[in-house]
Image 1 (spheres, helix red, strand yellow):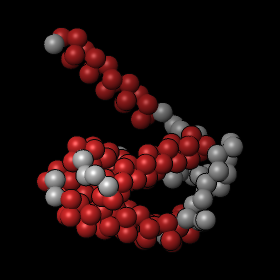
Image 2 (cartoon, one colour):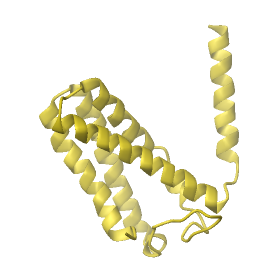
Image 3 (cartoon, one colour):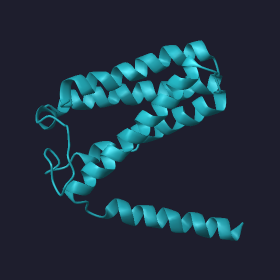
Length: 151
């Protein structure tokens, strides 16, 4: 037990130190792309379960990841200098994203709300309810992509 507490304390300290480090613009782009890719992969896992054999545990795990990532504060990864390619890291974000912060915040909050609801619905295990909420969650992704992402 003592080792577990020590390990937890050290990992929390490491996370705090990492969070306090100033990230370079290219690191911000890299991390946000990774976060969105991981969410996309998990959305794909839910979709596969809805179209095939439904496995509640897989859906719950994927929904938990999507909600956790949505609530992780990824907005901090849109700092100065991340509006264009830098350090070999390409971005598809449109310049309007950085100029329309109120609209961006509104879209982000809508996504967080739907991702959190997907997590709750997935825990219930009703595939039809998950399918309906999955659609709502996907719509909030698409709303931001349509407005602020270059193809």
